[in-house]
Image 1 (cartoon, rainbow, N blue to C red):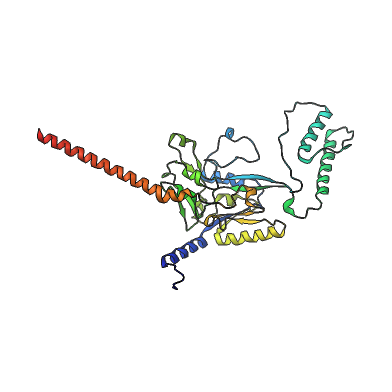
Image 2: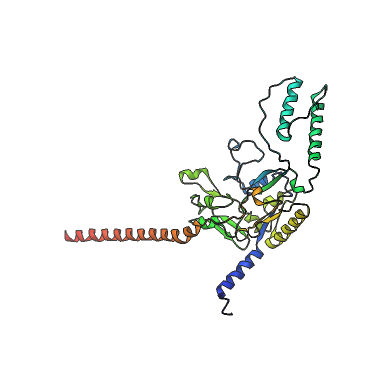
Length: 362
């Protein structure tokens, strides 16, 4: 090797093995542009992993089944209303408790208030005398839709049209995983051959360090950890299925094929082709998330716009304190424990010897 390039043979071998591992790993591809928010993946995940159900009282009714991941829910489809840059739609809870009435004027006022919240004030002379309120509602709806497209007739970029979009949220199975570095008992490990981060529930002590360290807020701690006997849980990429040449349960159940699974390099190629298609359709900010982040994620996401629009960190990082924690604090702690045990052992032996000497004197 030339003197100017000081690379050891060990470093070359490590780089080769790392590259080989990345190329041979599996990965899941999530295409947000295809997801319809049906949540079949949520049901399949619970069914296969037998994680049970959460208390409905802890998760009030809303657009999403859960506000976030839980100890029993490893997969949540998050809803996002992406509004037009020219005519953003803001949803507000303006509905009041309704009492039954036959007053046509009251029904009309309620109907108008609902639409004005979203699309602006009612035009003059819109409503005409009619025998049924349904006729008036239809006329109002048709007018608002017509008005919207007339005002936005100059929009040529599809990404500027208001729409609902959905993102499947779960473990990203990072190559440089913060949770692994944070775990003091090595309950979290990475299978570099297949490409997933696995949790050993038996080893887990419920300390919760991985919960704080994860940049994606994925691991969740059981409520029992408050009393010192809880555990952490998260997605395991259906490792028991993929080891038997089966797709993860969520991928298997997806009706619109928004989820794909295969070798990581093939999923990257597929994802890049989806990105190119989105950019041709006007989504100039389309991006394949996970190709390079944190050393490469084994869950890749096709984003029609920037990561911040979907609650994803644009530059996820492993917290800097974990380097000190794993390389300095933990070894020192282990040394301190070993030293304490050694001193206790010496003290115990010394006590036995002193007791023996006193017995001989008598």
